[in-house]
Image (cartoon, rainbow, N blue to C red):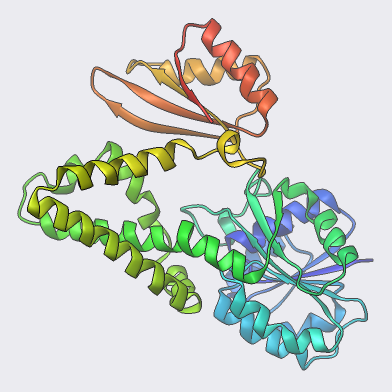
Length: 365
């Protein structure tokens, strides 16, 4: 019988365990965590079959080892695995948010002939811990794979094991991964947190203060609610790249500040023109055939039952939604609703259903 060992039963680890259960109900899932309460919860609810407090106790039994802890812990665990007797043909992978540090830490293990595949599912939740895990957490999310020199057969085996996650696989190098997430994930988290902190300070003497924060402010700062401990660890492992990106961002803000100060209308308009052009071109039609989501943006009136009417019509037509997001709602003004679908056919069918019902499609991505 195949034994899957998952080190770290937080949100990601417990969700992977449940997805593996759906795809391979006959496997044995072993959970390892330093928190006894997490182990007990996972075992009592059948998320795992067995538990252990330490990796060394059970690593030798595993056919697949998934490291689902912070990157600093993953690197330490890889060093430990390189010194332990492991099963012949064992496959090791991780879910860390930065990959160059992890791939460097995996070299001693790989030099022993152990297959290692770096991984990173781009999914999460504002909730954390084993109790927040769910098998559909990753559905339609991007899942980066960094196989390095690992054989294609090992990659295929991992994808088969995780097929119930229903992710969109992307194979990249560690450098490509860290550059992409550094710009599109790590930098925005720093910017969002800085904007929230600066706004709190700027409005500290206002009786209304952040109570009026809505619309655009809440949209661009939503990610500032992420786990501070996790993001501190992420920046420590991708610090050099994020530092460079931060400096480039600071330089851009400095140019805007200078243009405002001297009344340089042309440069200010160019600043907003470039941003609008790039933002409007996001999406598969403009940027190519990279696996992507398919969005509809529609106006919805600010009235009781409007959102329920939209979702009811989609459900009646048996159209599955990947995500739903209210971009802007103000009193007496239509809101903009973003509906995300897993494929172009569902998007097109939804557009027909909603336009027939009188809804205005603002944009399609």
